[in-house]
Image (cartoon, rainbow, N blue to C red):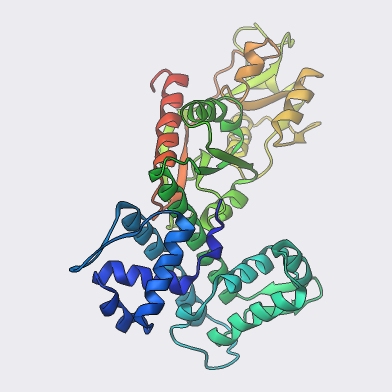
Length: 409
């Protein structure tokens, strides 16, 4: 698949201007390029994408369906680079020189690739290795971006290279621009009968065991060529990836209120926690269980921070009983399952998380009703995200799986 960072951004601007103006001659005056240069830029784009972006006529240039798709995505990508440039020059930073007021129009793909690589590696040598160029070449690209912006982007520290706030903003917007261009490539390829779809999903624990596998299987049954990448981790890490374009959708327990205003949440269903034990636990089958009964056994508790931990603390706080003795804090479902099956420990989990283990008689739900406010489970996406057809299909399938799994609640 074509790497979106390899697009010539100057060519993209010229292309978008021709779409807007309807003619090469008028666009030439706006982007300060000659007509032959613009003609050549469009030809290169069409060659890269493998399709015509315009129909040519004596009356002007009319974008094809592929041309309109590419123009919409390219415009959004260039707008994000522009927003990153404005944020970089407008925030608190150290000025290195006067720079250029519209330096986003001077940025090249290799410069952004260098910036993003350094932001991930925090080291010029490691970043150069990841990009596949020499360290001096990457260093030159990185410093060229500083020069045109007039803003300090990199600082040396004992731990390596630290990015300034200006560089972090520029890197975040650059990744979002790359995500837009990747979607453009996928959508144009789909018009030509090629499925180059890619779906990047971030998942929190509850969705990993049953809901997400079913949705992915349903999607790949419909679109077997779709490439799917699933990333798990703590909520804050996944939110960072989402906001930086590393993942498209975050699935799991929603946060109330929404942690930041550039993401939106959509509920799928309300989930309740249950007390989970091994099959044949001494408390299994007993009626009228009390908190004191539960506190008599060692527990596995969620780590501090996630909403589930607050529910765990509230369970015992209401009765002034603690379950701190021999307490183990863990978030790995694999570890929790292993400890439960080999001991009399108890834990709080959603029934959705242990559905396979319950079905195969490995774990069971104790007959104790946890008084709680139901947790909303759903999706989190970027506020201005415009999904591809494949991404829309996945969301539809995910909603269908959740409706069936929860009995339509």
